[in-house]
Image 1 (tube, rainbow, N blue to C red):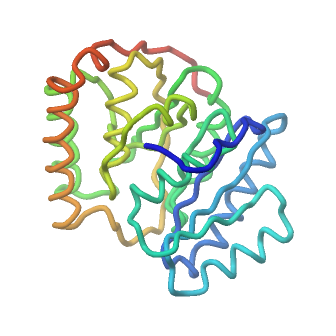
Image 2: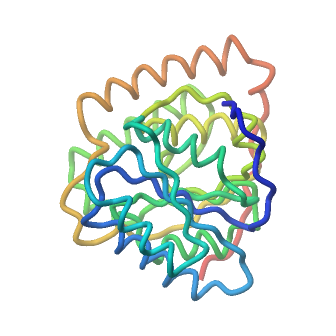
Length: 257
């Protein structure tokens, strides 16, 4: 990944990147949830970077009004809809924090999860989260998720409870990656590449957001992208850049209250 503008200096401890595409119904609640969490995490300097991915509704206007009252909230607008993966890459390039966490603009990430990620953000290179209330996803989604995780374990030798879970990342390491995912598979791509470069990591448990009735990640188009990304990852990890991705990650054990 590259950027034509100078990289921001790390003026914050953490950048929260909020990808948002046509989220006028949820973006205000998302930002309110983030503010509630931050009020319980004193001593951590945080910027909230909302990346408006070419929305054609009132998303940008809502964020602008919130930012007027909260200087840590900033709006960046893509000229057109680029997709989740590309939007996250924009957030990485614009982040002024030492660490970065992605919070969906549809208010899908529970406050408890964001809170535990932030509180543990300094304890390893990567702070990863898994959800223990798997019954909320249903049988089909659980089976697909288990198969997906097993495939990644077998092919990439990474042992995680949830390969696609929320995570706190080191910004410098993210910027050194060359990322090609443009949609939902970017999280798995980032996780595999950082872990195979020897990053330290911890895994913390949490619960899913209750009341959510839809998921944008489960579609034929995203399943196809997942297959394409997996194939390309195999080539990069095991053939093209084998020496770069030859390290083993270090698991850090912590007590989670």
